Image (tube, rainbow, N blue to C red; front, side, top):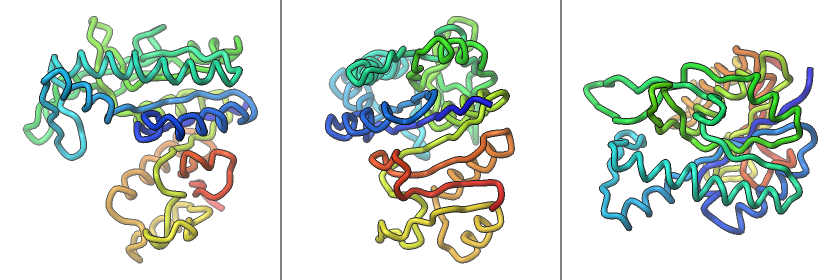
Length: 259
């Protein structure tokens, strides 16, 4: 099967000019087909402040009322997405910026109440059109996907970028050999949170259980790894958790079904 790299990069990277430049340079030289999914939450928060719109978060999730939806649509689908696309064009990649509404690539439904919380115009993914993405990729384009989807009823929905990356990877894995990489601020899953050199090179399902029992893996890393193993069960070949400046494979943690 054809290999495809799906890379998810957070807002902390795309909003830092030097970090973004390094990331796009490294991304450009990755072999084979690739897809980039980006965040941009800090930019959205700053824009909301400039426009006098209150930012409300619950458990790290943004409450997206009508005013905030306008802002995230402008920032994610416009400013951030086009900056990334322009940067990739500079690197010689024929990138195309997309939201889930473009080409009907990602359809979602509005999130129902959770624990009595109304998240507003936030979407949970129902379907990814892997055929549409494959047509773009096969024609030589590099999809750059903003964290926005749609419900088919004319509504844009704010959707978690990690979720979009995972769902895109799983959809493409139906007929491609997919590696999913999550870029964040650490070098990988660390044995010692204060020691960047302690990144664990490979974690399989049994190692994950052992690391949890030992307290080495805890907090927010647990759901990240749970999502990684869920992607593996749905056909993704491997998941990598690494720093944005280590796309070349140096360091990082590979998540695999078994070793």
